[in-house]
Amino acid sequence: MRWHIDRSAWRFIALRYLPFLTAVNLVWETVQLPLYTIWSDASIGEIAFAVAHCTAGDVVIGAAALVAALIVTRSGPMEEWRWFRLGLIATTTGLAYTGFSEWANTAVKSSWQYSALMPTLDLSGIQIGLSPLAQWLLLPPLTLYAARRSRGRSPSPV
Image 1 (cartoon, one colour):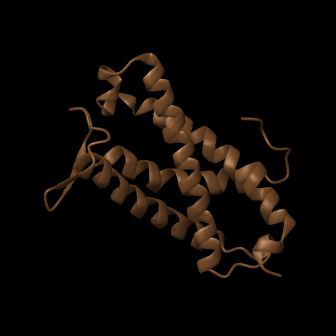
Image 2: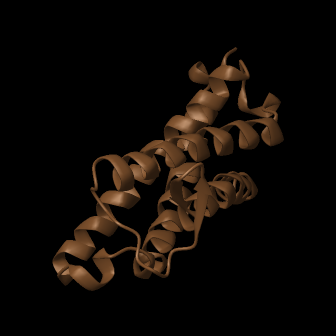
């Protein structure tokens, strides 16, 4: 049986992984606000919208990264998942997308800007914020771990 027809896999994703992913990304997006110019240039409403929008985007990226990892590893039922490999692939996928997105939105489209507080990584003249990169290095494995550890308990509301 493949993962996509395993009801326990879908329950895990919907009731454990996605709520944890939403919670940790909401906190991260809120805490890193001073690293972007929106913190000082926007109204409270615009900031709240940006946090909600970015958190929703993070959840979509994280869900897509996990599904990509499940597809790439040809995962079977959840009991046979190779958690380390899934975490590594999901993390790499989220990190790659985020690096591209940060570059596209700060350098090409100018959709947002880093504040002077954002530590950056210079990749041949392209500045990528370290906070969003750290977000995708840390949160996917943390989320998978927390979601997996909570399997025996009822899901926490978020």
